[in-house]
Length: 173
Image 1 (cartoon, helix red, strand yellow):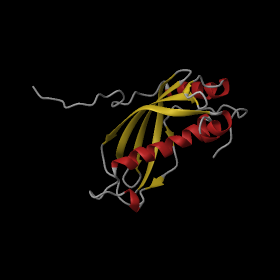
Image 2 (cartoon, helix red, strand yellow):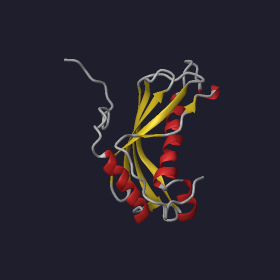
Image 3 (cartoon, one colour):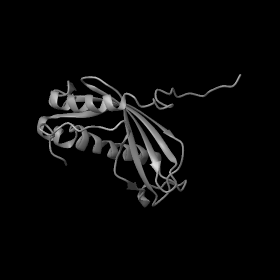
Image 4 (cartoon, one colour):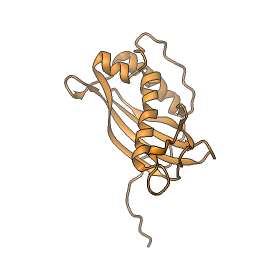
């Protein structure tokens, strides 16, 4: 678990999605179709986003443990556009699409590092929660400053085509 970033300087963020450390598909994540099971895509995106919450924004594990506040996901949608096979390396990239004093709207891309293809996209809406009251709460000023800096850096990025996509069967005619 990382340390609280209360007194840490606010980073200068690039106008590019945040890349998290690479991961590898273990044998236990493979299903009867011979590829990574859908449940593990969600888990991999979650583990990847923990890096952003812990090391970039400072609102992850140490924040929850010490300040009794933490992020909770309100909504998530995953688009499966490729496959990941046993042993393949992958990495997630995250773009902050929108934010306010309590909520973060992220778009993530899971990239297969073996061939550079996209395996999946995810879109999440999370909220800061007071873990004692179990109610939403504003981010502390120091965290909001980090979120604002990231959001401003990402504000000029093109909006991903699948952001806000509605699920449904598209009928022809």
